Length: 222
Length: 222
DNA sequence: AAATAATTTGACCAATTGGTCAGGATCACC
DNA sequence: GGTGATCCTGACCAATTGGTCAAATTATTT
Image (cartoon, rainbow over all chains, first blue to last red):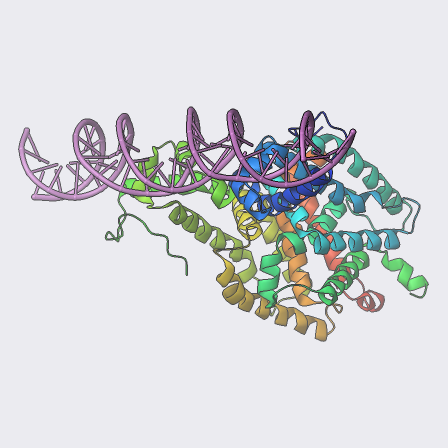
C-alpha cells in the first residue's frame, strides 16, 4: 500500500547511525505534520526539530512525501492496535469498556499520532483513501457484525453498530485532537492521569449505561 | 478580539461589488483553509477558487492572516449558535436531544466550518487560544452548572458535566470532521438526510439512555 | 457625456521551499 | 594507520509564495 522511498534501499540491514537518525527524523516529522498537515509542514522545520540539516534529512528520505508516508504508516499501526483487540467472544460490557480504555490510553500516550491521523482525514484522506475504503472498512464490518450479534442476542439494546463505533472513536480521540480546547475550557495546562481516569469513568458510564438493556437491571442485581 | 484588516476601512457602507466579492472570497477561503489549515493554504489557491486574481483578493483583504481571521470569526458564530440555545429551565432529556440535533445539523450543513475549527485547534489554537480560555470557558462553565443542577436534582445520573459536553461535541462534529473516513468505512459517497436521522437516533439513544436515571423507569411509565 | 471613484490585474519583488550535488568529515573494517 | 564506505552540509537551483504597484478597465456620480 504505502511505500515510502528511502535513499538507500539496497541495504537490508540498518547501520547504527541510520537507525538512530531515521527515528529522530520521524519523531520530528510526526510533530510537524501533526500541527501543519502535509502542505503546511516544511522539511526545513522537520530538520530543525531533528537537529539536522535539510540535506541530511534528504539523505535518509528522498522526498517530503516519503517522510509523510513513513509517519503515516507508523501512525496507522498504533491507531489500529486497540481495535484489533476487541474479542467477539467476550462480554460486551467488558469488551467495550476495554476498547474505550485502550483508545483513551492511545489519546493520552500518542496525541501527535492521533492528530496526524485527524489531519490526514481533514485533508480529505488523499493518502489513506484507499486504505479506509478497503482494509479499515472490512475491519469495521467485522466488528459491526460482532456488535450486531450482541444486540440480536439481547445483550445490548438496538443501536446502529457503525455509529456506536464512530461514537467511541470520536469521544476518545477528542482528548488528543482537541486537547488545546479541552484544557483551555477546563482551565488546565494539561490532562493528567487522574483526569483521564475521570474521562474513562464518564464515557463508560454514559455509553455502557446507554447500551445495556434496562430489563437486566430489573431482574438481577448489579 | 479578532480584527481582520481590510484594505478599505474608511467606508462603513459596502458597495454592491464589495459585498459580493468579499462573500465570494470568504467562501473560497473557507474551503481552502478547511483542507490545508493556515500554513498549507495559499492565497493563489483561494483566488482561483473565487475566480479572481491574487491582487484582487489583496484589494479586499490585505494579508493572508486577515482572510483567515475573517473566516474564523464567521466560523465561530456558527459553531456557537447551537450551544447558546441550551435552555436551563427546560427538560434535560429534551434540551440535550435538541442540542445533539442542532449540532448534527451544523455538521451536516456546515462541514467546512466544522473543519476550519478542527484545523485551528489541531494547530494548537494559535488564534483562538485566548478566546477558548476566556469566553468559551465561561460559557461552558455556565452550561456545566446547569447540567450539574440536573444531576443534583436527580434528573440525570452522576457524570462529569464537562465530559458530557465534550462527548456531545466530539460525537456530532465527527460526522463533519471525519466525513471521508465515515463515508469510506460505510461504503458511501456521502451521508444523506436519512443517515443523519439514523445518527441522531443512535446518539440520542446511547447518550440519553446513559444519562437518564434507571430508577425513573422502575417507578413510572415511559 | 464627462469626471471621478472603484475595481481589476500583469508584471514585478524578496523570501521561502523542495530538492540536488560535490567535497569534506566521520565511521567501520582490515 | 590506511582504505573504502557512510554520513553530513554549504552552496546552489528552479519553482512557489505573500505581497506590491501602476496602469487599464469598469462602475458610479455629477
